[in-house]
Length: 108
Length: 121
Image (cartoon, rainbow over all chains, first blue to last red; front, side):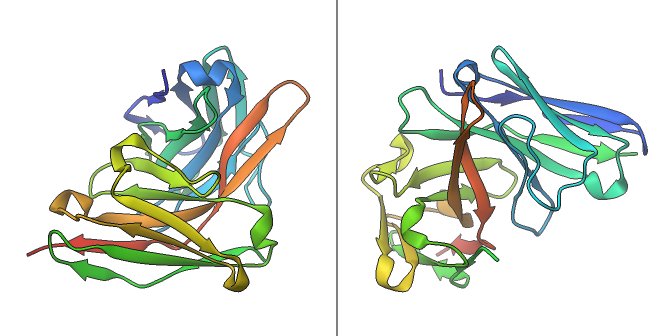
């Protein structure tokens, strides 16, 4: 299967920890990338490979992978972490790429 | 600084075509493929295709064409037969891949700013 499934929404109290998961068969073969999208802005890559942060991404973001599940964890969530998070990978044929269904993160 | 700069917003009538450009700078354009992704109102990100072998998502096959002009470091995405369902923000994004010794990762890293396409009669 080429689908990547995420929980639609999660909420986290300011300063607490939240984990977002992405499930799909292709994740047994390939790591997921994670993108953050805020309203009115283009997406931004926040994690890849599975625990590497691009330059400028704070270290409260961390990633992991096990079996068919990739996870993105925000430790010490801040108000600016609110947004939609999407995982991204490709299928086992190597030809097609996919985005997860997206998770809306709300910081309370 | 790696940048992808897209062309401006478009308003099209049903049945028309739209052509969006994506100009790259700050890196070797020929060293990376580009993906096209869209987001319709209230929907998630949807992968449309990429210039690596010019592979398109099955949903768009027959309607989309992705090309590159390496002389000006610019990629193009043309979508024909527009309907109201094609109203969306369209993004180009650079291919991103690697290997950590155990497993590969594939995806995109840098995104263009997006191009809003509105299809309305």
